[in-house]
Length: 255
Image (cartoon, rainbow, N blue to C red; front, side, top):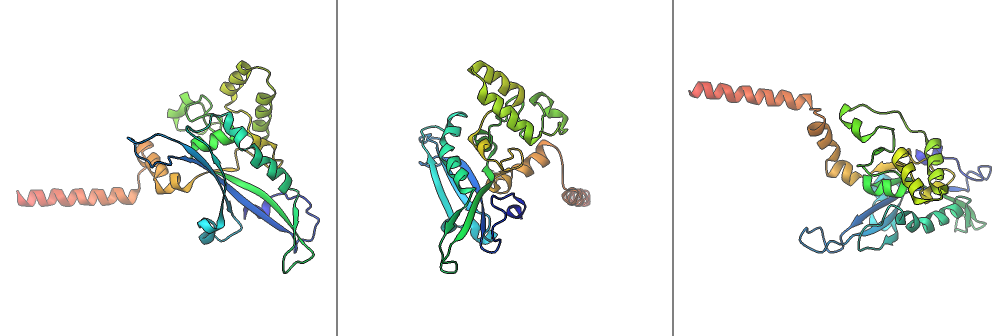
């Protein structure tokens, strides 16, 4: 489990009494007037926390999720302003990572609680904005490897990014004195600063995940694999072949 492999502060404290909580952070935008193309095009953002310590059947139920914040519209935030929007969230996490004491019925003397977020969940637009990666149309478009947009047709994974390098590139972007230098660095590396980089346990390329709505419910991966990349299920191909033979046999018999 993810929370069992994380490095926690004050690891020498009583393991039986301490409580390590891991949350996922979901980021997305929606139209409060509904998803009608002819209606008002307004975009509001939401930050939703889900406790991964809970069983899967419970963790996504509204009663067990926390609507941490709303990102105001009318449009989705710029790549720079979103970092400022999540800064209060990061500031609280920097406090919670060191733990706090909660007095409970079973632990009247207090129980130490530690909180860490992992991972960031959303579509690629939301994830890349929040984490500091370039858009899907940028030259360096990928957060996991160094593939460039012009090489996309080769269907070959590029050199893997290293978490340490990403953090160094983000810091270099932040420390740049002029906007032109920042733009040049972003074009060359596909990385800019995110407030999430302040978290000592944060690894940008590892702590992100494509949301289940975009991944499975909307069939994004199936669409890309089957129609864009040409990967087909052999079982389906065989069934199509059998159906084709059956239809041809019926046609020749009737003829």
